[in-house]
Length: 463
Image (tube, helix red, strand yellow):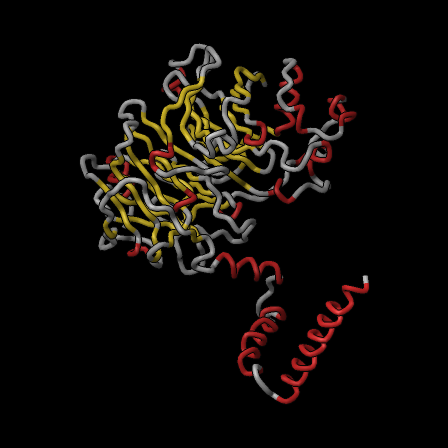
């Protein structure tokens, strides 16, 4: 202990000297008083707030981060192919002012005329998240800024869906919102607890809308906390709720041990009748399942599956490496695959098979994101596309679209602020880089195709 006394003595003397100098700096106005006082006064003013501003300190801190232009910027890795990127064309743009939009870059071979709706970090006046419509010619045509009345999260959320009439649904800042194709906000879904939770303490994460959004027959499907919800496309009112507890009970009734590993209170877990919506979160580990996608089987695709029917739900639980099909009207789990994907996102009904964005972050060869196909009648898994070909390797994000007729794959690369469209051969036909300055991109959350016919029809309604 004695050998450390000189060290402690030096530390104490340095601290005392700093204290004395600080006091003298304030009292006698000596260096570096004039350098430090302006930012210090700003910190004090921010701490105290303004009488006309009723936001809490936490809310003001959150807003400052949200509105920081580069709060969600990253240094992207170069695209692995030598391609000629060009500035986007904003001469025909209609929508809210978006800063740095003219800095964005794109690549296109222009052999196909397509339109893409891209959602992510775009800097508007009072929000950091927006969506743009861009053509394969690089023309940015429309824009939508996403700003709810009250923020629930800092992040933008990954959810984006378009209704049959062109309404956009997003879950920016944890708030489910709908905007018309022409740009007006139509509604914000209410942050309401399930009636069974009234008067009970529940985790904050159970009071936000999150992850993917799917549109099906007049409803948007997404997650509200631990519930699957479908909301009316015109009003945002919740039409139907399915709590994760109902899926747990369904598995129990079918003697399927799919959810067991995530429970910490074994006594309550085994007594299924004592589990309910108000106490179940006390039984499970934090973020037990991390639901991140619901896909609804459409009538068009239902005929390509022998054992599924229109309205069946394909659900992803990231923290269990589990994807499964659930039939709401009978409360039955019809199909599941456990462990064939890792930290997966965006399972999707295709024509006779299921495709998944397999993040695969713990592969022996290193993180290797890929699109995989899962057999419905057997336990086969095959790689549809190795996303590393396009420099995409995401551990905890990911969404895609794949067209069985054209073999066109559409992927959002959140880690690099880039969206890529191309064929399974690896040939890209369109790439968008959300650049704000050289070597710096803003995050992208989602991309979806919009047909030329839809763009023409929906845009004709706008002034």
